[in-house]
Image 1 (cartoon, rainbow, N blue to C red):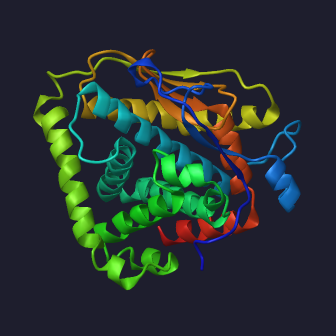
Image 2 (cartoon, helix red, strand yellow; image 1 turned 30 degrees about the vertical axis):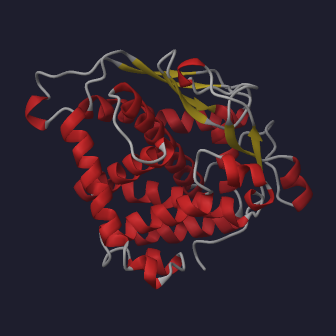
Length: 314
């Protein structure tokens, strides 16, 4: 099963209530679901990189970390769009943000297949499968019952279905590698059409149409890089800067929606691996700890092999 591998990590839920204005922050009273690789990895024999030494980032490391960061930030911008324009929803906001992010990546991949947008979505689906394969979600009833995000297995299946449904001929290998059941695969083209139509409706109703981009402008979207505190964070920050991922995402979102107030994409320390939209401060926050956690997953041989197989198909 080329897309599957067991990667040990620990999942933590801090139970509580939302703050005023649904501000999405990491705090004792917030609801946070995140990856924390540490004691569980050590006890299961998974090597934890030495943070005092500068890591060498392989192409698979870069692909996995940047791909998952890209999807995470697009997901958070989904929240920005939903909240800013008060978009009506008939389901969970988290699922809607996932759909906006996934469909946007697939459409971008159609426009520029050489740019690797399909790879971003592929490694994101891969990460969700690794989360589920660890089994730790299933050990926590509060995650199953109360998490705002779907379980990772459901997010994995949803992403694979959208990828496959968008082009069954091109992505038949993805469905096969994921062991997708035939009855689910048969409905993926329809699932894709519904998601694509909804995304186009959001863009046409609330976004900037192509013939109005010269006259209808968004407020600024700035990028702020925090200061890394160890060689691993330094290497990851340099990788992020060289990729210009944050800057390209900012430019892309400014062409899609006329945000009325400035936004900052902020790389900072959060004391937990996460990414979130802070509505009060208008920050789309990317945590150093999330990139470090993703690197620890990417360093596992099974992950590197699976990423390599996906990249070879692109």
